[in-house]
Length: 518
Image (cartoon, rainbow, N blue to C red; front, side):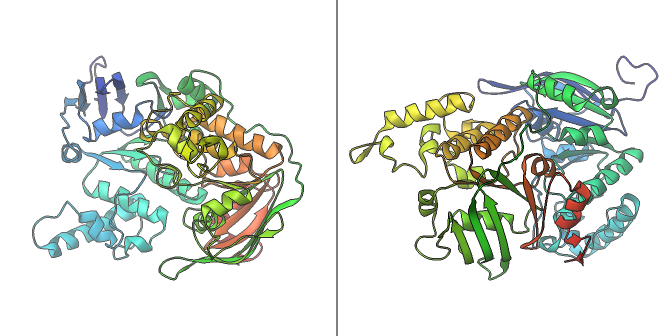
């Protein structure tokens, strides 16, 4: 029996006094959590609140310094992920752990083979997958290569992997970040069906609307501690946000009407091929005016990244691009980041850790990247490190970067604070055009509010902003116009004030109500 619950069934998961420190940083402090069997339990909190550490302890990636884990009422040591799997725990990661050139079937049995001969294992898995797919709406071709599947179907494979290993408890980390609204809704139907069949779901997400729509209970973490657990029906997004951050947070983007002026960016028939000769942009045309935010909506992988890369000088293409009426080099020696910055373009890349920063370098070094030739940063032929540190300190203060320590390496900051450093570096150059990709990916709700305010402030200063985001709420909240991309093409341009999420979702899936499938 569960302690303190005479006659009641034991909890599916019970954590008692879980603590974990990494050197001087206390990631989890005396965490207690109870999750009832057959429920969907949400866990929310800011970056650095300790959510991922707690789930990593539950899945065996880390060992707790103190505390106890009970599964089904029984104390269960979980020293590694194999022990977690034996305890009936499966985890679906935000970045899938699949082998792209293996089939669905091969991915499902990988690490769970019955012996040296694969034939019997594959036959057994095929039968099991067919039964699981029918029971849980997880239909997927077992012989398809994973690299040929949509993101939504790849996620189904991850869930099937866990169910094939007889998981009774599923942990999902930010599961809808790369899904269309229709795919997200289908995922929620799957999760609800799993819970109705007795499976226990733990959902980690920063999307409070999803918490309200799908969970039965929600727990809030702040600064390594569990500060609240409640029935979802008894709370609201605003109350959860305040618990997460410790203050009231705006749940919507506050901005006045746009006052668009002259055309800053003109793109005509832009085409880009990747290293394999596959066309990624297929004749894209668009304009962005001063004083407006043009949002690019779409499921990841439909050309948005390629668009940012060629406009930012990272990739090469063909077609015509003009900034303030002057042609940009798309394929020659002038196609590079330095030339783009000199022309008046600032770029906040989608992948901040690989393209936006050097993680082992300090904050002050990262704040100077791309602009190290600025006379303010030089003392004759040498870099003026004191000037660079002073500039970094000012940016940290204005953009509320925590901790405000210029000599810390970039890898020591949370994702939200890394993003603030990049935004400070790019926005404070007073660009004519800001290219910004996934501005709040992996960023907590307090930092999201701040980042949105900075983007709107730049627009209101008469600058042009081209925004790429897979977050439909973000696109709708920030954009003055929305262009939807599918398969390397612009499917249509919509006014966010007069369009619906359903209409955008259809365009993101390649379907135009007026024209049918693309």
